[in-house]
Length: 201
Image 1 (spheres, helix red, strand yellow):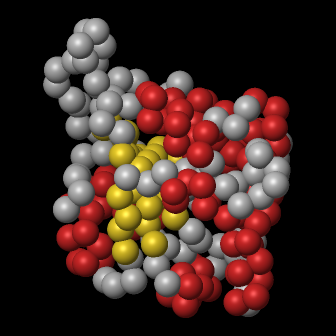
Image 2 (cartoon, one colour):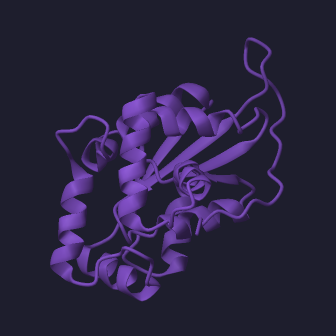
């Protein structure tokens, strides 16, 4: 299930130098269990409209009558990038994001997605959410999503596949982290996360 609810977004006033309405985008990325969903909820509360690159994959799986488990999500995302280019998830999502609003985009997992979003949004920021392995693993266990790891070794194996890959169409989280404009630590509570996020907005 997507972490994104979709309340009415705050509309931006003004326009770019060429007369086009503004579209502000904040990308949210991080490893499994880092707390990206909590950052999205905080951005929603501040008037951003939430979108997720994973929603593009979920729609494809739903159209095929397939479940949204972790392995199928990863496999289908890689397949879509191989067929439509490494930025295809961002490209498809941007088609449904009209100008004049502020967006928080979750689940950025490839550097080509970062560049596509950066090129489409004025004042684009990529926020990398980080937390210690032990905290992330405990969060992963507690949420009990289909396909999530049930042991620490399995958790680490999932991460190794997502961090870097010889396949250019696979997830490349290490490369995404290197492109981050801001890093937010989420080892603490929601109040600490909120303070850290507000400092970069």
